[in-house]
Length: 155
Image (tube, rainbow, N blue to C red; front, side, top):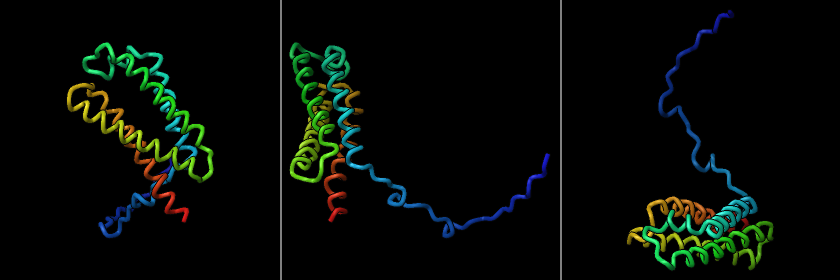
């Protein structure tokens, strides 16, 4: 067995240690990939709500009434449509149509997140909905990044 070299023990002071900043380690996701991710998620989630409406109702609604099935079916179509819109726009060039997709989806995410927070606090939705809220908040942050930061970098 070969002999291991002796390890030198050195103490680094706090001033000598440099950690990378968040900005150095942040790698932005390209817009087409981001829209593909969000679009695919929404298409799948919309399909889940449509195909398994009864299960989705009992998963997310605290005390479902008769109208819950109809409402969730309708929401499945809206979710599916936003996903499809993002998938179709992912390779679009800069312009008013792409801006409408980005702003419209951001509004949809923020509006539905705000409604869900209110409905959880009033006891209409189950606590599991917090996971959906967290995910939509992350997606909304991605849209803000796409709209503000990338726009500023393009100038």
